[in-house]
Length: 310
Image (cartoon, rainbow, N blue to C red; front, top):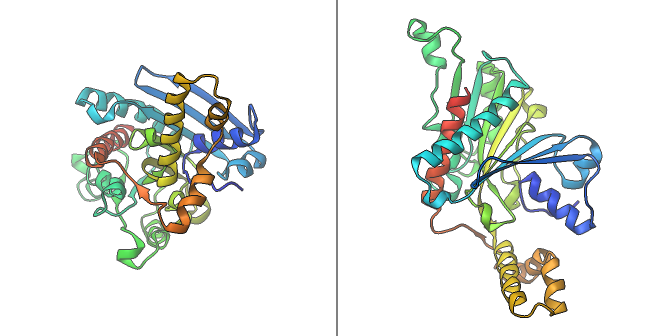
């Protein structure tokens, strides 16, 4: 299987198609929907084992929402992005549980590391209702869904695998579905904190940066797991590859007949660049200088989207 080094199903599909010179992959269905000039939705559905093997993702649905100009987004644009996320989230939740099914929201990551802090920050903004329904039911509208939330921390600070913590919680409070929020890795600098992936197949924390932990999914927890992931980092090799493509593109404008540059632009040079960087320990994980603002905007979008959908 390819060393994709990206968590996004849409990117894995594109990488596999390009490497194998395929128009489509058997077992994978895709469709795109343009919401407006700034928001594009791409839906990837893996339908059989061949599609699963091709891109290394389990059978299920993967919805990618690309959002432009988040660095300068105003509140109304954040609200609009939240509504798009809400609509997609409601569809995927309704496939698995009823309107009153209890939900546990889990924010993965390390709150002290900005690119990895999205999950814990979202948890702080989730409207939890389980304790109110249990202890003060007279103050809650009838039919309100039970929602609880937790940020379990990371193995390096707790000494406990996230899956072990979640198994204990699931056994005790018995939610019907889990929503997991986590930072992802991407193969495109354009997607950093401007893309949301929703899937109903769970998540493998750290897989995109080569530090895979135990899988959090229906297979390991016994209940459906909906994952919401946002890319916040890329590898140096990705950055160099993207910059090289942009550089070649610029040269192509000035020398359109240069066959070498045209061929180089068509290739995915990621693996070649990575092989050059790894021996010197230069294949770093990088994030933009504006990551604080981007994470704050994404935190608002994801938290509002979850709250409105629940």
